[in-house]
Length: 363
Image (tube, rainbow, N blue to C red; front, top):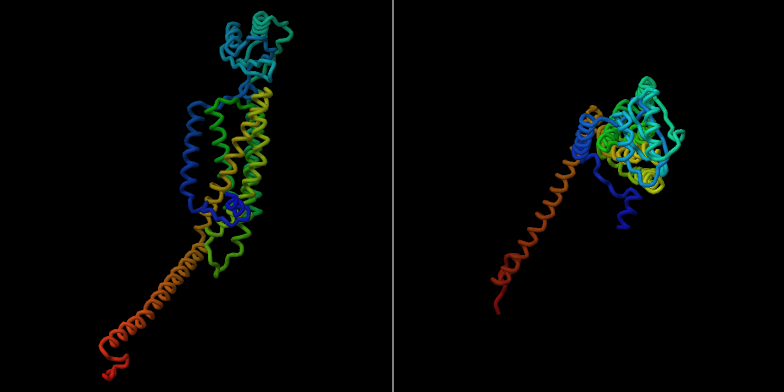
């Protein structure tokens, strides 16, 4: 095992990522279908910042539970009640938009049930108009980000690399959104920031791989001994350990925030951001290695330049195989006369004839 890791670090192990592209395409298609089904069947649990509503915050009392708090608030009139733990000491209750009388009624009900001063039950009303503006700005930021990325990659590399990178980014975004849909995690502005962050991280990983591919394939000429596919796979193998190390170093602190901060320390407000980062980094690492590069190779293989190179490499391999077969056949043919002569000589000795056809004299 240590020897394998050492060879992996040196880039001596050549893993055929591109050759197994059908496997990666199938896996990605499955993940995308499951994610889209989650979005269609369940949808995203949009936070109050997007859909508008009323928010109540108050201290947790001993013995109170999510079900008790929800029942208390529903008895006061609201119908769409979502109860969450805000840290380790507070409750956060979100309802549909309420008027002033409805907000006051909920505050009084909560204060009476849990023996709290009414002033300690804070309230905040967020209008649907403001939530719509937040959603519009989030989509606008995402579109601008995608356009800027395509422009940069088209200038720095080429349009095929830009297209492959954008497909990988959309792949990461849909799968991450699907996980939010199936898990029911609330989507807040912090979640949107997490989405933009993981897109940038995934793009960084893809650019590192593309830069190595550009460097390796730029040396391929008419006399090259490998095709574009083989050169791209070789470049991907050499950047593999760099991608894995970068991903591991980035994921560890995010995992600490997600699993330790939200469970042991009760930092519930951080889970919106940390879950998006954690899932997005895992999916982004996978897509940069197994989605973006195979798509790029698929597009490049259609160019006449690389198709001609593939034919020349295949022809050289066939010629080399024929030459090796002819050499092996000649070696076997050269040995057979010697063996036959030895057998004739042995037979001649037994018959009293020397190997020149002369009779041996009898005494």
